[in-house]
Image (cartoon, rainbow, N blue to C red; front, side, top):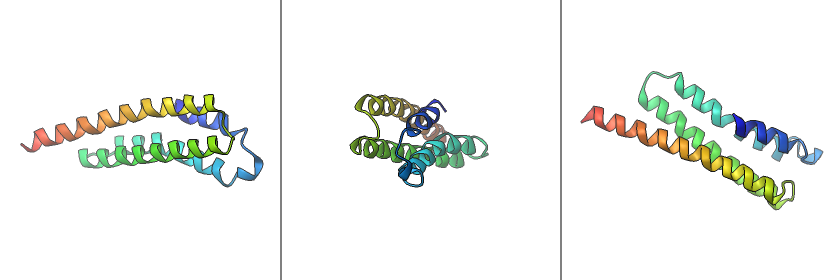
Length: 111
């Protein structure tokens, strides 16, 4: 959720012609991360939860790509970009840990 707030803060400064382009796209990807985690939490099966965690991770990688594009276009400074990518890396580590844990749990239950 903190990453989403940070994305909204930095995208306020993007050029107006990007409002329906990169601004909307980067915000959508950012929002998709916690939204997919929440949707997975509401599911009953471990496989469903895992599916939504993987979706969240995909949205996170999409967001990272868009941050790099915004940086290349000079919409973000190198410092802002690094801060966002570092926070994204933290979220990726958490997601990867959750996914790995669920897979191990699932494997142990099936054994």
